[in-house]
Image (tube, rainbow, N blue to C red; front, top):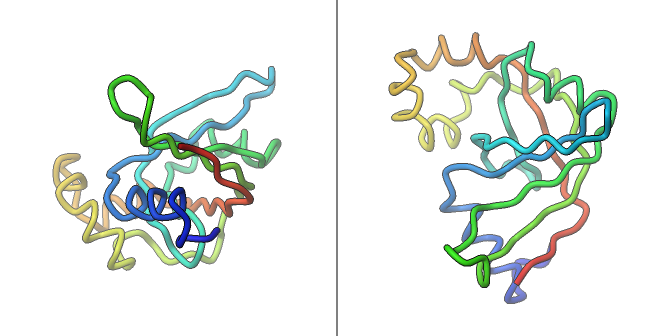
Length: 138
């Protein structure tokens, strides 16, 4: 992705400043299943942590093509950024509490869940990596 274009600069701003992104997977009946998730931009991809029993993991294993998008302005007229990509379980990714960018971004959210960072990592122990293949928006 070219972060030097107008859309690329907008995408970079969202990547740096958004607290959640909407991840849409597809279930067995091919119904889109959007959900807001915590994420960090890490090594050119989205890094998301999940509970190991979450439905989105089964969706990703069976149909890895996903989309991600940010919230827009109130009317949806500006600040639209949508990524398409492939998701995969990352079995070697470090736990969330050892990822400084993730912990810095979500420390207060983890505290709001009444968990320590280590407890969060045990509960949300499955790393998902989404590698974007395209971006569109305005």
